[in-house]
Length: 285
Image 1 (cartoon, rainbow, N blue to C red):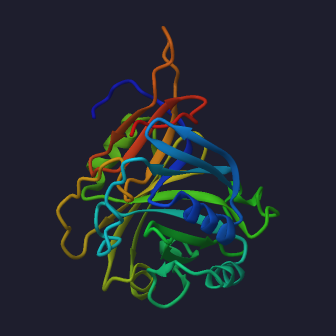
Image 2: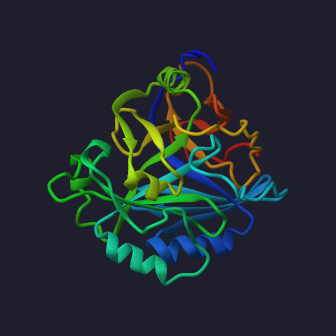
């Protein structure tokens, strides 16, 4: 996709495809205190919209199910995508998670305190009962970003900081997201024992590029692993469980009626929903 003149204003939400909406909804409610705000019967799918902090996540169960989440997917695979959930206390958050069935760890040695060069946060990666990757983030005292300081009294699970997507080529992916209105706001090179334990893979050499719209949260992070070999690009259909999507609120057309939501893919096949505000319409399935 080239420069179409489309300008995104904000990330308006996220979508997770599931084979069992009731089960996944119950997990997010119990694990993270997510609140259900609506349930809708739509053309081709059932949608349950949850609020987690100030962010929304659509749980989508398709009438025609796609493929389950690939079991062998690693963070270096370009189909990999996770949400990062900010917590006020990592020990309490992980204790709550450990009391629930169905999830599996990605991190190999519990929460990892990353060195300052990698952001200085404490992080833990795992999968929900459908296999979707997730990450818990706990900012160090005195190093909480201003956008999150305002939510510090919001309880244990404060919201979604970003969605991280694995890419083959940082330059190409950055150009694509710039064409939608994103700007580069941070870049780090992550490596070492802590990163290996966090990702569950040996000797990661990871280039991280943060991309933001006008609002700093939620944002997108590009993960480009310079170590190891990339698997061939996976073609993910919109009804596959791996078809996690980022919803973008875009400028309304200047003439005529508002366009219907459009589902597009980035250079690595990650799904993006473009919709004029309010961006709560159901994507094509």
